Image 1 (cartoon, rainbow, N blue to C red):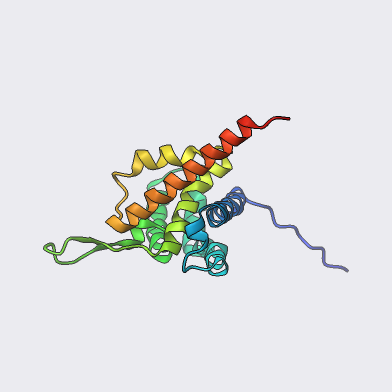
Image 2 (cartoon, rainbow, N blue to C red):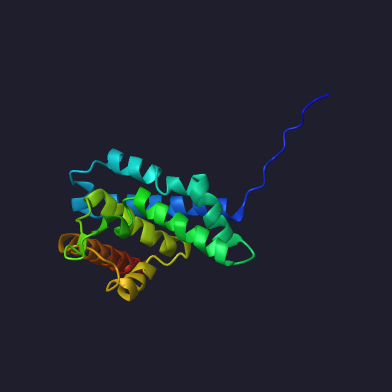
Length: 188
């Protein structure tokens, strides 16, 4: 008797992860190709793409995967499902330095309070690519700008990181606007 291979079903969350990672890659490559100072910075393209290749890798860990899958693709939002997701999200932001929350230090001593630590450029680029991935999935590359405007007062970034984020976003917008203008002015 032969053993037949059994094809495993492709789950909705797996499809989401694949699409999300592809779109993060598109965003990061776009920034490296179109924002000269990022492409020519101290972070090499090879190093940056190695980071991008590992984007959200921890979402495949059992303690994140099951909780995310149940929360976003399950049939109920029970207390247990929500608590599991909150725990998984906390693990995720502490494992992945492309999340701004990763860089917020909450001290034990109330006098010290919160300290917002500057983010390295490679993680700023990955963070923006992460945010921008949802615009790529909706085929609306300008979607990131409204998304950021709605959240910028909530997102905790140190001054230098915020300046870099907003510079990159301005340069993305300028380039997209220029490309749109060039496309409109094309004659056939």
